[in-house]
Length: 543
Image (cartoon, rainbow, N blue to C red; front, top):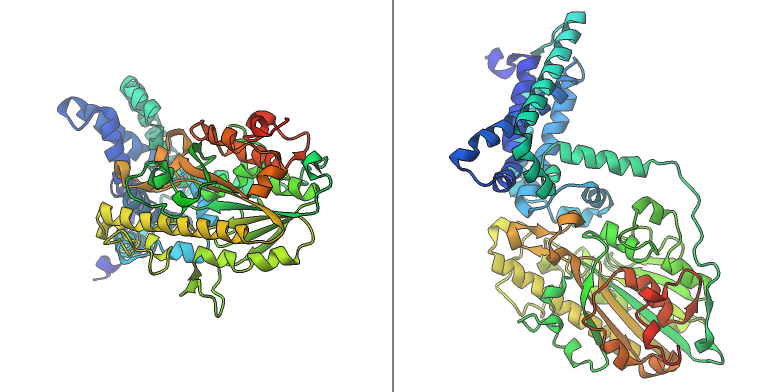
């Protein structure tokens, strides 16, 4: 009985067993992707597939052998088994890949959002692949090689494993290279190296020595359009969440997901806009920075002032109202109000979260209390998944039956899309109500700019949610909606030719345009404004 409860096993055998377990049960999606990349499961490809499998096992064996010391082996193996079981579950269940941005999302998401991903299927999966093997490791009586001989033996096993893996890599390189080069997502699918590498990159940036915030646009001043004006302006920037352009009927989607916005005659919808990233933690700080997608670096953006700072330098009151998980550093030096927690008596909260209309409750009072021109950012909960059905109140379930759980395996793809489309329908009402509110402000010139931070995969290519590395992210995650509404007095005040802007609706645009276009729209003069990226530059009369 004691042998069953506390099995005896040599350290090299345990390490090899764990390497085989990680290479098989922990990497099902890696191998399915690799098989497709290599040309399929055919007799001709079996030597390559078998060789690749042996290379992975040997690589894992070499790395784990380096940790096969008493008092080190068990904690390391248990930590890897538990974390790998979680990673492999999310990769398999939602079709995601794991890179530095995904790890950043894990650390920066709030508890409520994270809880939506927890379900019994995940518990069972982690139990089977993570907890049970960990119990075996914890109870095992491991026989470690002792002394100098033991060190030499470990070194020999690790070196031999790496040498044999390198030899096989050389032999199969001609066949492996095309698959690895054309399918770079494979590096983000191989568990546990994917999250170990990503975690290292994230922590390296996180713990980098702090630097002072670099100034930006300190020369910003209001231009000629402001001269002699007594009326106040209110500009609302709505940052959408997980809304993809393909599911907006304004962009040609077959379902009528934008019935109210379609009736807004003055609304200008830009149909061809690309995001800066595929996750909030990247896109939000990127879109409010002056760096642009090609030059964007999270650490650099965090330590440099952005669009909201420049607007504050120009004399605007800038306020960020949040119904999400924060502004990811974009609003650190302006007013911030977290409205995501339920407020007693609010008609727009249910359970432990609030719907996006909660953001509008305090807007009229905020405008009345301000003696300056105001720029307000409304950060939506939007279409954040996987619990799409929780993102909208009763009365917006037009499409259905919907998937009302975060366990996608229990739902048909059609029901997942139905629930998602209802979130877009609610966003339609939220934006229309925002416009109505702005239109009803007496003696104030108003405008609204809306764009989403990134899109969402809804089963295309068996991929769900978002966060894919941009290099091979599908268009569903990068093609985002963007639209503009201005009151008549606002467009007249700043000399904006709406016909000219409307002619640019199909022009290829991106988040890179936002920083410069907001400054251009509000006639803010500063050296950091790039007219080539300013949507309004060619459409301002007399410019």
